[in-house]
Image 1 (spheres, protein in one colour):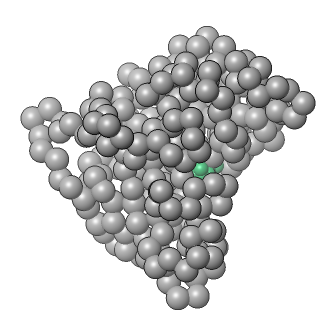
Image 2 (cartoon, rainbow, N blue to C red; image 1 turned 120 degrees about the horizontal axis):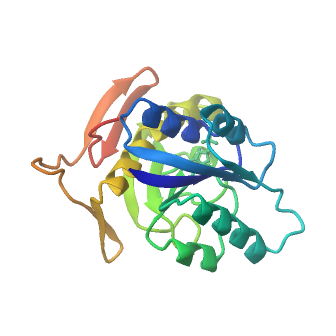
Length: 228
Ligand code: GRF
């Protein structure tokens, strides 16, 4: 089972979804560590409840390189093989990223490359897009930039406010992130330039996309969800 470290600065709803899928045996990975730059982060409470080793330190006043090195030490000490950013609201230093090159994932609440940055969902809404969504991608040294693994789209309703749109996006984040982690754990993701290639499951075939209708309305995910 792939041992993952999760970095989170906030509520931790994506961490909670990953933990729940692991607990239920749907996601064949193990959360080996949760780290935060915000000692008050809700994510730490999810980790505590699940009995996962935690590391938290307020970053203020600590040089970025030192902070990241301290995180790396803890991550390595817990034997994590991959790093999952789940609402981690700080840019990581090149040394940190190189330490886990090709094994760091991030989730972003917009259809990248549109609307990178701190408030992708809010920025998309303010821009007036008709389709919003979320993206899981590999992390490189540029913010919200690395190769795209999976994206989900939802329609934006006339008059939608952030409180209408964001729950729709979050509901899909909680499905596409565990799916991406499972693909990583299964060794099915490779790179062709900056294109992510998903290998078919053993004995299976790839479906290009899937769509459905949830409590919050219609959605489209590509590549197709297989397990979540
Ligand atoms: C999510 O919207 C994610 O896309 C973004 O930060 C938010 C984290 O939410 N990177 P949560 O802490 O997982 O609830």
